[in-house]
Image 1: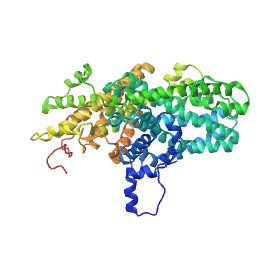
Image 2: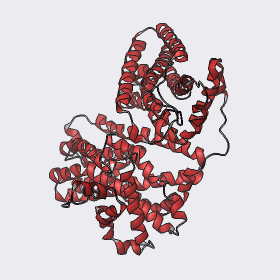
Image 3: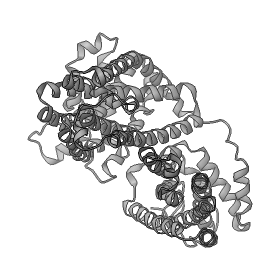
Image 4: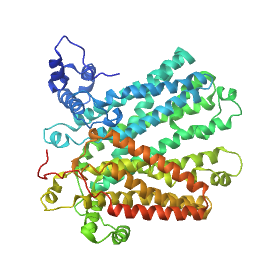
Length: 586
């Protein structure tokens, strides 16, 4: 549902294009603002200056539509018409995905916990994913903090505008993903059950939203500066992993059922239902269906407790979040220490052409750039996400847990598939908060840009890729046969180095640290090529290391890593990019 789209009027194309990008037009025609106008009295009675509230919200919506980077990841970074919000343009994808959720509703009308619960679980998982991709940028929007703090806007008005702003997107995502399952519930379970499910789904939407508010409010309260951005990156990684785990847990319910027909009958309360909180919101429907307190009543009680806690937690959390947003603009006063790991690798860098100096520069820039970490680090943990597969299989399969866990084939592929995030890590090397800092190199006679680019690529390998492969390799050694695990880890190190250099070749036409962060400039062709090559190399290398003897995998990994390192020392000899401020730049 797109309340932001204005009604068609008999105006010329030129006038339409102009009005679509004018703040005054949005103030007058935005359906979202008209929707909030219906509650003007209610909002005003809560101590909110409604005129200020409407002005702030209107300009936030205008800035979202005018900003080419706002939530553009949800629109696959494709081109869009000027003045049109990228988030709304990408909602059709989620509406299409929601059709898959309808199958559970129709397949299990006699088991409301499983049929309706899986739809709510899938929605919650997608919400957490979108929270990491896009909603975080809106929740943690600092573009207007300094302006509002100096214009006499009250705390209640700021909080209300911030809440309304994010709820526009939360509710739009909810409608896109839950409209089809809700309609399906009316058809499959009846009118009364459909109404109850609609109310429960809306309550889940609010709980998910308040949970994200509380999470970020706590983080902002305890952390500052660059450390705060590091913590936010870690939280986004944890959210992504938890969402995958939560989606896998209901398989335990299906494995406990003897047949498909038994899954379509009321189920007794199970510990998995207590862990997967979206299942709690199916309690009223299950209670209505079976008339039994177990499990419908138990889940209903859990849902009621959650809603009550959410009600009392929202106002304090939103107040703390709004008051502490300015912390995101802080930066550390001193550079973070480098440590032994950096010093060890710096000794391996060739002495010629100031390579050690540029390796140090790139390391420092990557270390201090919180925006880079927030965008890249979640993509670098895909290998850890793959660990969930053998773990869940071991829990579900009968017999010895440890034997089942060790025998899973995924462990042989784990180090190799840790390279999945490297294309985006190398792509985002081009962005920084202050690209003008490179002007000093643009004025250096005969400056070798190849050295700067080469050491930036090397930093991705050493700082991001190798630690992930080593950690996953150690886990593989502990879980599987030690010698086989060592061979898999060494092969993963070689594959990682090779993938880094290959992706460096794809992106060598762009200036490292030469552009302000803007996701709307994604080179989709290079990104797709990088991902396809990475997947192919990781797949082939992982299979070969899995079937080969452990000693052969070690030898191959050493040769591949050493060859890639030597290749990196001489690669990118003729870069085509231009530095900011370089003479001759267009």
